[in-house]
Each structure stands twice: as C-alpha cells, then as structure tokens.
Image 1 (spheres, rainbow, N blue to C red):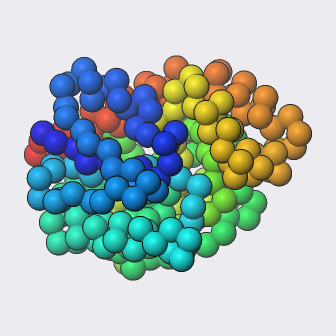
Image 2 (tube, rainbow, N blue to C red):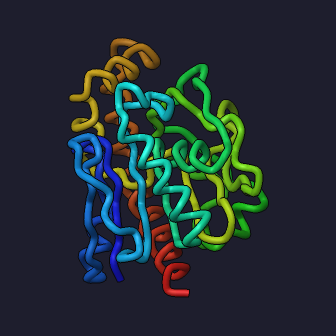
Length: 238
C-alpha cells in the first residue's frame, strides 16, 4: 500500500498517525505544497490524506497551489473513488473542492473541546469503537457551512455543526485534530497566525490553558487516533 499526504506547512504532518504507519510498514510520501512541490501521479497511490494549515480555502491568490490541490482532491474522490482522509484544512478543502462551501467560524473553536457523533457517525465504519462524545483539540477559525450535496454529517458541536463528514463511500474528513502529539501545541504555537488566534480566543493565558488541556487529554487523543487509523485502513483494504 502507498499513501499520499498533502501538507501545507511543515509542522502540520500526520503527527501521532506516523507511528501506526511505521508499525504497519506503510510507505507514505508527503508533498509540501507550500514549498512548491508538485502533486505526483495520483494513480500510483492507494489513499490520500490532506492535513491542516494556516491558510484558508479561498486564499488562492496568495497560495495559487490551492487551485491544483482542489482539482486533485476532486479527481481523487469523484473520479477515482479512492479513500480520503482530511483534517482541519483538509476537511474544508474536501467541502470546497466538491461543491460545498466554507465560511468564517464565529467564534473560532480553539482549545480542547467536545465533539459528539451523530447517529450516522455512530454507525459509520470510521468511528467504530470510538466514544459518542470525544475530547479533541480544535484550532480553527473557518468552518464548513455548506457540505457537499451527497455528504453525511458524522460529528457536530454546539458552535460548529459539521465537525466530521463522509462524502460518497470512501472520503472522510474532520474539522478537529486526531493526530495530536505531546509537542503539537508547542510546535503550532510558534506559527504567528496560530498563536495570535489562540490568544485572541482564549486570552493571554491561552497557550498555557491549551497546553494543559492537551496534556490531560493526550492518552484519549492517541487511543482515538489509533482506532480511526485502523478503521480507515480496513476500509482501504476493502
């Protein structure tokens, strides 16, 4: 099996999911789109993961590579019908590329928060074995306001109704981060856009609050990430 990963900033990689890939001996190639790396031949890969990033889906003038990335996502999901997993920006890009839309999240969701699986989510293979209410790390100021026409909402929160979705049979995405590691908050806080959003949302002690919450929830984050990873790979094998 070969996995293709689209990255938009160096620090937003597959995170804790890398240990599961290594344990399974799965080859994966990361394309650093923000560095000008080109998208390879899609037919060479079996699954596509699209990670987060500080840019927004509509920032195509500042980041013109978003245009071919969206085209590749459309081709992958609509034409090739291959397994897809999007996280944060990858969730928003899936919606945007497939005919949905995104809008500013007011207020932004930043911190360790709860998301709740919908009835569809409870019955979806990606979330098999995971709790109905999940603690997760959020760090976003944009949301999917109109999901693609044939999508199914799998998770929600009080302020963001599209926390996870499935489009078609094999494309899943989540607004929140399942790939969190012990150093994630520290690494992401070094990005000015992320740090400013954190402080603006949580106040001057926002970093410490986020770091404490992540540390307390880390075991649950990793356990949930492994179940989602295993479930996704089971679907790939099918």
